[in-house]
Image 1 (cartoon, rainbow, N blue to C red):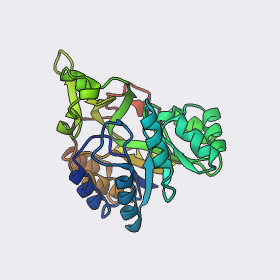
Image 2: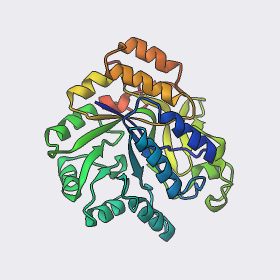
Image 3: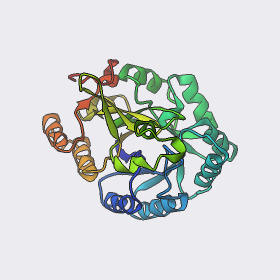
Image 4: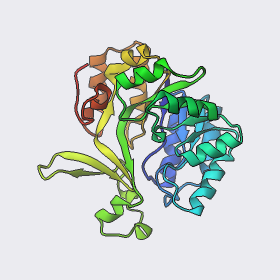
Length: 297
């Protein structure tokens, strides 16, 4: 089973991003997803910068994958989409069907991202026919639902599962971070830069509920499947995805690598992760329960 680092979902200063991936080049990870997949207003890095980082990671022995924006809203977004796809030295993760259409027309293999809503074998088969060689399970899918899709998985199709990080739940044309500060989306003052792991919001009872990340809404808790590694392996999952956070990401990858290789037992792995997490863990979706629940394996 391979280990992947998902795309950076937050907005960080330019130098912080370059320093982060310098560290990741030495981290125990097989695949690294890159690119701006959340918001078109995030301009610290351009497509050519992401391609430069991808080339350095490839030279370090990683598979670099460039991701496309999930919510396409304008002609400029389409131009950026084409620039990403034009970086032909790297595999593309398609996060909307527009990207799938372009890649399929060019007969290019691609990764079907988690936001394509693959919930049945017919959809998975269609994406395989269009050129997908890997699909990423939607984060809210349960183990039982995954088992059904794995039974009908097309030949040659890899399966990747989001295994750690704040869950990316939804996208909106409205920027909720800007709205929190009574700002318009087009004059957001790039407030996301102030929240390197998103802006946590609480219920009236002061319970952490969701995380605002610009136009993306995330869980407040951290999805954590470290205790389900053997179940994932038994289901034939090929790749586990870890989502970046502003601190301790290389250390998180080391814990998951040790678990994959059988060098650490679940209780010890949980203990090590507890010291690195930005919030309490959850795994409810995997068991068909509310996502914020923590269910005993």
